[in-house]
Length: 115
Figure (tube, rainbow, N blue to C red):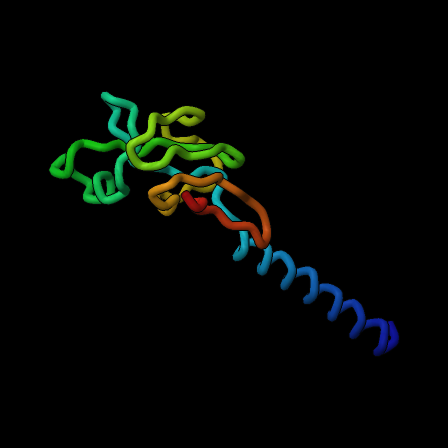
């Protein structure tokens, strides 16, 4: 194989590997969990689930799939589940007090909206 062809193949291979790596770093989770009171079905601040104990009020993580809107703190939840997903990436917390949408893919983000 001539030298220029070999170097082109190496450059193309490295470019594909770099694109895959960057894509994985920029990806958002398939699911994002918000803290919820399982009795009232109302969203709680994340710290009420983050402690790992029921000391702060017994909140449980409620999992929203990508594309679903999360309730704001104090609002009734819908569109998710208390059951942890069996597949896909999961992140806990981070919606903000006004809720938000679980987004995915390269260069996207999730978070609250103004209100």
